[in-house]
Length: 140
Image (cartoon, rainbow, N blue to C red; front, side, top):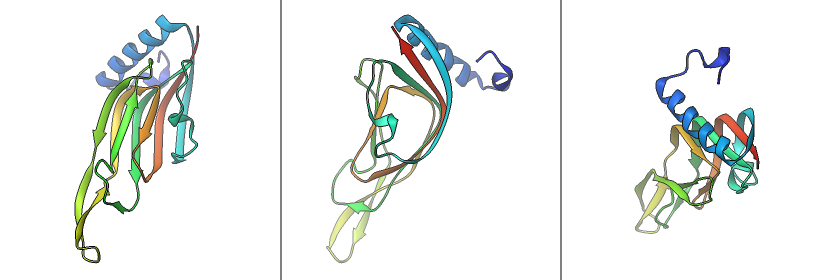
């Protein structure tokens, strides 16, 4: 945080950084790694909980694919350092399916800024993630 890359950070980014770094510092020694990931959410490190990591996303894009009859099709759940639900968000729309003569749920893309989490879980058909931020590796 205290380097050239943070000189143009927004006030929100500074507040988020101070909060997350305080949590991580209280849990143990911290190694900070800038992280950019763009690709499939399946098998990505973001889905697996570990007591030794936290993420601070400066920007995160999440996307699903296809339509479903399930509710919460566009739901994303973020967990905190204790693996408890910290934040839950949905972005979906109902679309009419002429073939099935029923409404289907279509997930819309999300863009979330300045959020911290230990892992993220997506509803069915969650396929894509773009993460720009930091991973904090904690060694208690």
